[in-house]
Amino acid sequence: MADLLAPEMLVSWLQRFVRHPSEQTEFLESDPAVIRFIRECVSPLMHELGMEHCFDAMGNLLFQTGPLNTRRSLLLVAYAMTHPAASMADPFAGQLIDTTQGKAVRGRGVAEQKSALAAALGAVAHAARSGTLQGRLMFVLLTAGETGRHDAIESATADLKTPAENAVICIGTGNKVAIGNKGRVDVDITVKGKAAHSSAPWSGINALEGAWRILEQVERLDLKTPPHPQFGRATLTATAIESRPRATHTIQDTVRVTCDRRLLPGEDPDRAYTELTEAIVLPSPWTLEWSRGPVMYPNEISVDGSLYGHLFTAFDNAGLGTPSPWYCNFALDAGFFGRKGIEAVMLGPGDVEQFHSNDEYVRVADVTGLARVYRYLIDCCLG
Image 1: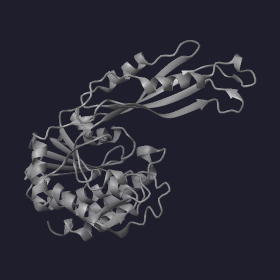
Image 2 (image 1 turned 90 degrees about the vertical axis):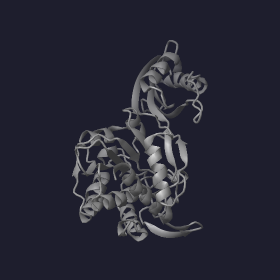
Image 3 (image 1 turned 180 degrees about the horizontal axis):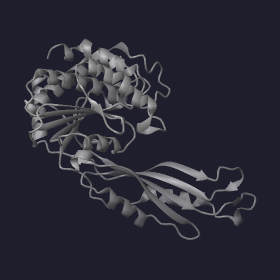
Image 4 (image 1 turned 120 degrees about the horizontal axis):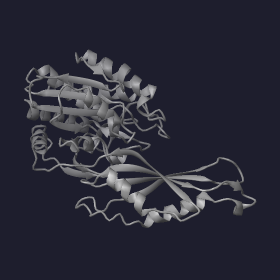
């Protein structure tokens, strides 16, 4: 596997990535720090490795190599954006620390996005140098990572010259193969009332009272969706509430309740949204307005399929034994591919329990192990 997959090489890249912050802000995928991370941190490293690449209209980085006139292709998807530093101490130091399970790198995003990026980049660079590819190898680094929508991957794949036969979403999964994940549709329910001075509340229609009734319905609503054998029942959860006007001593005339409707594999977000609009109602004098927010599609592949078979071989060749299939509750871009009939999994170093924590770290052995898995998977798919 040569030096590109050596622990000291991967750790140096990971520390380089951690020390270049790329936190989520209100600017989402267009945040200047995220764009700079791709342009000023990762892109120069790829030039050092001889990996010529380009950028799409959203600022996503695209790398492609191997023969074009083939039906064999593999796409590795990595992410630039991390959770904000929040109250984490020294989030961008990229410290190499000792743990009970060996050396680890500590810093914001190492468990979620940046370790998988380092491992994938090492594997892709090694494969590109090998000269043995019999299919198209593609790698994209997205401006996304925390935004909960498919906009970035949709933009990037539109600029790729070859459609993906298989895709790996490079994100922390604790080295388990996420063969299934829930999707999500965000729903905004706006309660409309009538503003009035709070000294005479009978002159208004309090939208807060209407929102309270909405929250009661959300809590007890039967979604009537058949349970999934692994995930169980679908869920609907209120996640935010905002009222207006922002003024003292005023009966509120508008309250927006945001809900998270998790989608089970096979569920359609449009149908799920429509069913909510029909099930949740308010009597007069309130009125309701509905708005559908971002969507991420659910995903599920079979362990008897070709991609999992390749992963089985890759894990064995990398000395990591038998891969563990996993069903995860969070959503990312695997569902974007699954909806198109393309087999996709989520897989990477970093434990989910570490995501967004104040002491986020990743074991060096996990980063190097997954880099080997990615590399052997490229051979299985394209060698």
